[in-house]
Image 1 (cartoon, helix red, strand yellow):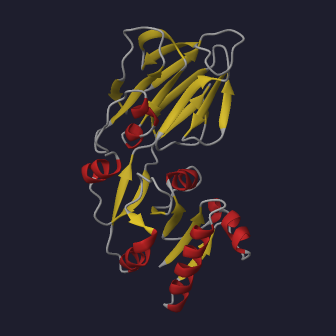
Image 2: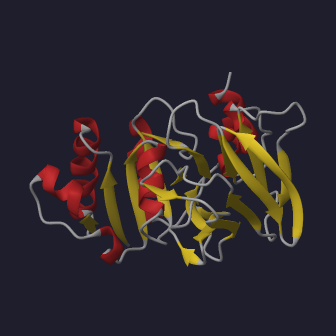
Image 3: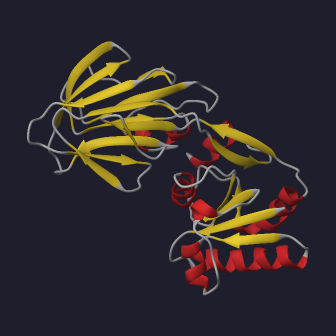
Length: 268
């Protein structure tokens, strides 16, 4: 089996773990490759993540590292947690070797998680696992948004921003503004509002196979679109942003994952 490795930037503990696991793989006759920016930090040869050909990609760090990787590859991911909070990982640095051994023995399952396909004026952007966020580029300034589901008009709403979240992202940004928690098996997306200027605005759960359309209604006032907390794109008046379920789900290497246990342990 061949593995790829990606590290959280500026994380000496992550690099140390990758060196250890890489040495173990080499000693036991397995091949591995290191993502290029991680390789530069380790002063070894590496490969751009988009060009890595492996059976699985091991991300070492936290949720941000896994989300960064998932925007750039369709390989199945094994996230190893080194940071303090990581909802996407069931493997800690302290027990990483045991789980890597199980991976090498093919003692695992692959769990698929829905991702959001986002387009701006029909131009496709990278898919997102947690959420897509639209918010004003100026702090504390509200914006007008036109909201549609397929061909149905929902409403025009003034708010600081809008969050479109997957079930995976339901325990992230959406939750912080009052959105519900969804079991990852639910085929739905959440629409949540950030500081809406109305008493009637509430989070909504809609079918993931539908298309959520948002139209920017403020002339001369820009909005920032951010996918999974990565790089943002500025959108403006009458730009149409569409969200639906991607045909490319995220794939995770799992051993004994229990959504409700993980939620209970990490949120109490």
